[in-house]
Amino acid sequence: MQIVRELDPLRNAVAALKADGALALVPTMGALHEGHLTLVREARRLAAHVAVSIFVNPRQFGPREDLAKYPRQLERDCELLEAEGVSLVWAPGVEAMYPAGYATNVSVSGVSEGLCGEARPGHFDGVATVVCKLFNQVRPDMALFGEKDWQQLAVIRRMARDLDLVLPHAGAIRGVPTVREADGLALSSRNAYLSPTDRAAAVALPTGMKAAIAAIRAGTPIAQATARLKAELVEAGFASVDYAEVRDAASLAPVEALDADPARLFVAARIGGTRLIDNMPV
Ligand code: PAF
Image (cartoon, protein in one colour):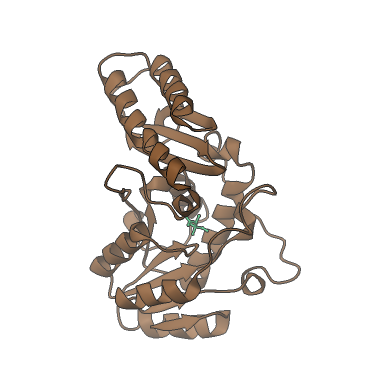
């Protein structure tokens, strides 16, 4: 497994791998957990070679967010990736990704509005910008992302289509279902920040979401079910709820009543200073 930190060696490494077969990219910010490794395993199933990028992208963190304390553990991440048969780790420093004078921003409207787009202004510009750069740097045949960040996936798909990014087919950007702990909490690098008490209380997020979905399917109005879910999360120990909303799974337009189109429940809530997000089909 090659670990590359500058663009020139990256280009050489990518050219050699692509000469040997399809290359799949798994973009990450490191602090790898089983959710990332599931993406890597799926990528290995689909492509001859897997490249994993590890870059804690400052442009997707707001001024009051956790950039400085975001977990960084490159050595351990590389050991995990080597054991999974990854061919290439692309781990640029901030200077390699955004050299002095860097001035370009990729901004996707529509799907980036509302939900995390509202709660974290500028976040999706940062994500779209870095993923656009990663696609251009690695030029993968496919890229895999976790469905836990469903809105992020929608933003990336829109960006790739709108900018005619060179990916060989429409399904080249793949979403992989969320990996969960035994009690249902979605895996996230941020779960590491939770105290034992907050971790125990955090299970209210997936269980409350499942109960709200069951209520909606049984005919409870969406607004009533989501209001009850917000109140239950606060009662369970969450400090606040950024949003609990049902939206169209593809367009992310708000849904007030279920129809034939797939819809999902999206929630972001804060517990002990940590912001957790999740989404599930309704
Ligand atoms: O989901 C993430 O880890 C990040 O948002 C991504 C896609 C690697 C871009 O920095």
